[in-house]
Picture 1 (cartoon, rainbow, N blue to C red):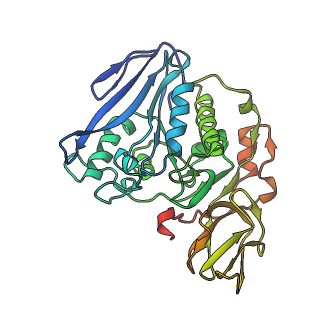
Picture 2 (tube, rainbow, N blue to C red; picture 1 turned 135 degrees about the vertical axis):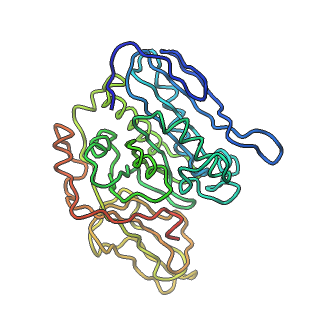
Length: 358
């Protein structure tokens, strides 16, 4: 990846040239709505006064995952072009169709994050994926994609990366989220496409669909800025010299309701749990036949259902197995030490999206 250098150069995107030290908002045509009104991809391009890498930050590739939109808004307010080395391309709502309808999917019911690389003459999902690839992914040296949990679920802020990539682990450690999850890439996803093209990508999961929470927004915004500082694109803050040791995992599982009824949760996202520890009880409407849900492994709760009313078999707790649970949250004197201290054991396991486990 390029490092920050001398004076910057104009950055060209969709035929628009953004001068060094300039920030501009763009609306890139993608397709046409049923009313004949053009559909566009909204971008904020910040071209630094000095040369350096090009990094994109994308939000709401699933239209109801709006936590990332708030994070991008914070970044727009905090990244000054005159103080930036390189270029930041910020996309607050990639799936603008789903964003407007408060829906995860596109109007054709396709999942945009299973539609890459797409094509200019394909479905609506294919057109949008192709446009994002051509204008945003192609010129980038790094991507950071921002996601949230599904409706009625909450995700502890966590970074997901492709397995076995030391550079991505380094960037994930610099980001500073509580948990790093290594997982195989999913066909058709933005991360898989970027990997095939040699573009490293971080994926943040944080918060809940259609909700904003301050913790997720703060961790997300600070994390992106820490990565930019790690790359030399902005001035480093004091936090980069002392890195908290995130918990690292390459295996996770969901714990499901043993019966239908009402849950009384004892643990939540962010809690460390041991094998056999009670996570919640599920009882009937009159409080009868209460059954306990226990953790099958030692780990950290990285996601939980927020709706107390459940059917038998509903996935209620997402637990990441952690090899060195006692190290989570400790401090290390360098990113290298933190990486060594938190390495998981064994090969990475597939990690399902929220809508694939219901």
